[in-house]
Length: 267
Image (cartoon, rainbow, N blue to C red; front, top):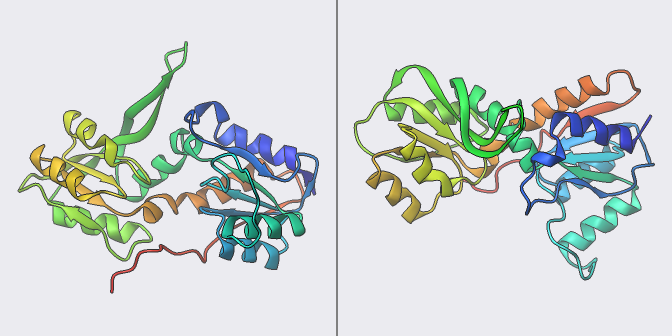
């Protein structure tokens, strides 16, 4: 076993908390830094199903991408979903930590995993979030290029097949071939204009609304909405691997949630 603090230190090395956006809530959200951890379950969301998995596999800790708690709680109602989930976690002494926007921004994090999955090369920054004194630039999202130009229909299929997605939504802006691609995992439609101004032929993200799609067409840039879940879930296995490596000297097992699926289905 290891102390929860050791696990949190490993997470800090992979996704430093200083990278997180001001509105975010990463870190240890349930449990104690002093508690013992023998088995860790890595997931995207701390859903009821994930909590059931953690109990069934006797996990002592859950490491999630999305924080279980975002805002201050004024009450814990165990007859409501969040309260019931917290009750189960506390009853079974399961700690919960989150690495959210810090993992989005971190090198090797969510956006780098997405870029690699969909075949991008020569990655660079997209939405710059900070710049260190040594000149190191940190960025939300990535810009990259495909090895060869592709028709947008073919690229959309490539994105779909590379991710845990049954479908993608393509906003086709015309005959423009795709070579330069911007991306932001999860919900990044707010950066459509920035992607277009930076010369992206296509932008890959999730949660795109009607008028945001209209804006992209007016700007002459394709958009591929691959969904919030599908653009982020691939990091779960990568984070499992990296945590396993960070904790290799300890007697701790790190497993990944492989059961969760997207809420949205095509009927």
